[in-house]
Length: 76
Image (cartoon, rainbow, N blue to C red; front, side, top):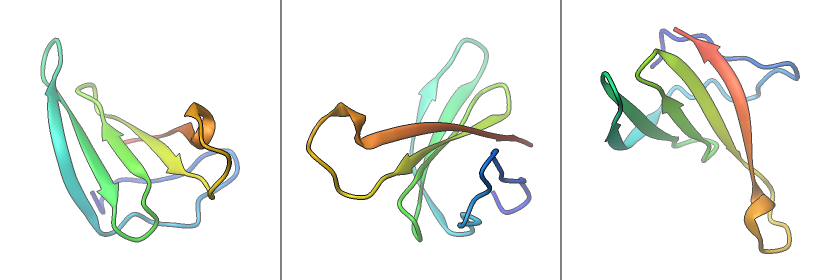
């Protein structure tokens, strides 16, 4: 995953150089792969179409479904 570019409107602090594979999910034509960054804890989703998405880990807040924020990230 090191050969991919990362970025969003606000920039990113972590390059996600060390990741662990969490699993795969079969898609319509291929599969989606889910990774976790070992440095920052964000989850990275590599879609079957080659798009990369980040689900950023936020600081501890009140319990609830709003603790995760989806950031559209980059392309291969």
